[in-house]
Amino acid sequence: MDVYIIIPFHNEEKYIDLTIQSIVEQSYPIKKLLLVDDNSNDKSYSIVKNYVKKYDWIGELNTKSIQKHIPGEKVIKAFNFGLNSLDDNYDVICKFDADIILPNDYIEKIVGYYKKDPSIGMASGILFIEKNSKWIYENISSTEHVRGPIKSYRKKCFNDIGGLKESIGWDTIDVLLSKYNKWNVKTDTNLIVKHQKETGANYDKSAKFLQGEALYKMRFGIILSILSALKRSYNKKSLSYFTYIIIGYFKGIIDNTNPVVSEDEGEFIRSLTWKSVKDKLLKR
View 1 (cartoon, rainbow, N blue to C red):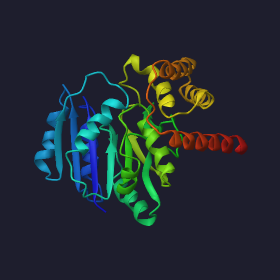
View 2 (view 1 turned 90 degrees about the vertical axis):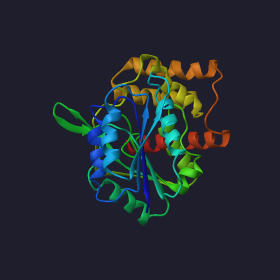
View 3 (view 1 turned 45 degrees about the horizontal axis):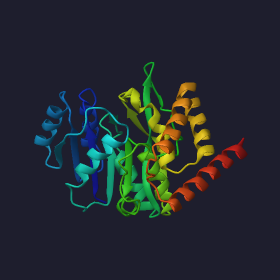
View 4 (view 1 turned 180 degrees about the horizontal axis):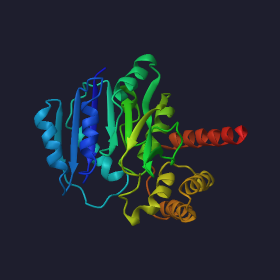
């Protein structure tokens, strides 16, 4: 299977070298790696250029969006800019962040899942962050969730979900739409990826309401949005995080924000989410 990887980046000079090196050292050959510089003003680009000169399967592009880090929108616009420059002669497309370190068998194992089970449309490992000199699980979502920094898609699944949405919550929307299109999603909890920078470290303060807006865009409904906000604020150990999410949800209503999924997709998402809630309650 031919694997294409796209890495959008903005000011990642502290991390991107180790990220690219971990891809170069993969046991499974990568067909193409495209690094998309989104308006960096540090040394990231010069680091990337060194790899481009050395490896003919590594390329780079430049795009210029706003400097402010808007979760979801900025990174996916850069990803799509890169995607539009590539051919579609791939079997697996990956969207990776520029601050991860892959184990050297990561792609080999991911491809193995796609080969073994044709029903799998998305696959990944899980993310660990460093705390007090120890690498621990980054506990901001379920271990069953394919996280944004380490996404991979079978080509047919990627096309079925219509690619990636330029919106906050894109990395939940894609999972839900994959399931809506009858694809299975696989996470390997033994396949550990080091996340060099904690999620949200670069978010602007104005982004604090966007998680709630994402729930509105996904047609969660108020009750599920409250439950989701409670869970996320508990994981974050922050009551204010709950308030921000709920305010963001109602801001979506007041602003008449356009949902990013259809009514049928929204109904499926609510049904699937309620089933997950009930299953977890029954286990207790």
